[in-house]
Amino acid sequence: MDLARKLGVVVGPLACLLATLASPVQAQAVVDATELAPQEGLRYALGGALIVAPSYAGGSGQQFKPRPLWAVRHGRFRISGARASGLLGVAGDGGSGASADLVDRANWRLGASLRFDSGRSPGDDPVLEGLPVIRRTLRGRVYGQWHIGGGWNTSLGYSADLLGRGGGGIAGLALSYDWTPVPGLAASVNAGANWADGQHMRTYFGIAPEVAQATGRTAYVPSTGLMDLHAGVGLRMPLQGRWTLFGSLGVSQLQGDAAASPLTRRSQGVTAMMALAWRSP
Image (cartoon, helix red, strand yellow):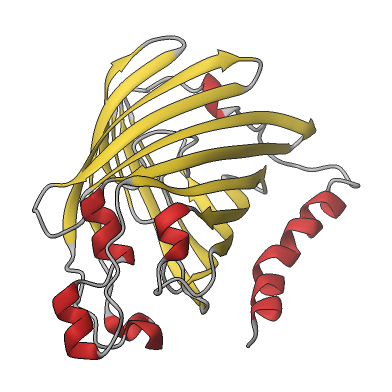
């Protein structure tokens, strides 16, 4: 299955959302993520997704895979699986894994989170053959979010490899806008940038001299700097009962030393997702 067909499987249903709006929708109202305040009771969501994503950052191959989605929230505390952090309507927070809002005010919040990073295997792509395995590790993240108003939000975060397995540190800045284009459909657009330290750049985009000598490659030692720019769009529409349909499409562009790496076969990456989830009251 080629990339165009894969994207069609996931992105095609997004167009159906707009067609569906031509007839009355019997569904609960969509709540803007910026209007949701932490609740004391337990809330959870379960679902599944179809995802098309690059085999690795800079890879030319695409992976097409189904994935279960789940998320649990109790007050300021949340835990969720990969790509499921927004199922309960909290945008721009600590991401997947376990997170907590340490300070939560009307227009801004500060928090911290933990998540597992699966690393990278030489088996992910033929280009990586002979390179060391990037081991699975635990990343810690601190984040802040500010609700500017009128649907605009900005966020800033920094994550680090807590186990010292070469993951290094990444800082990210993002801006998003949420609105309701037509009744029953919530939409969002976002754009941002990620900066990585030298350790992260060397691990994911570099070829150490000793590895180059053993594999016959040319050594490449990238430095700290801007790693990528990214942008995306998301749609959310409630269906019958407590079911909700989600769709997203994102594009990222590697920058600087990351784009110039000999491991980078395609500096631009496209990720698409279509998900269906049931959310508790």
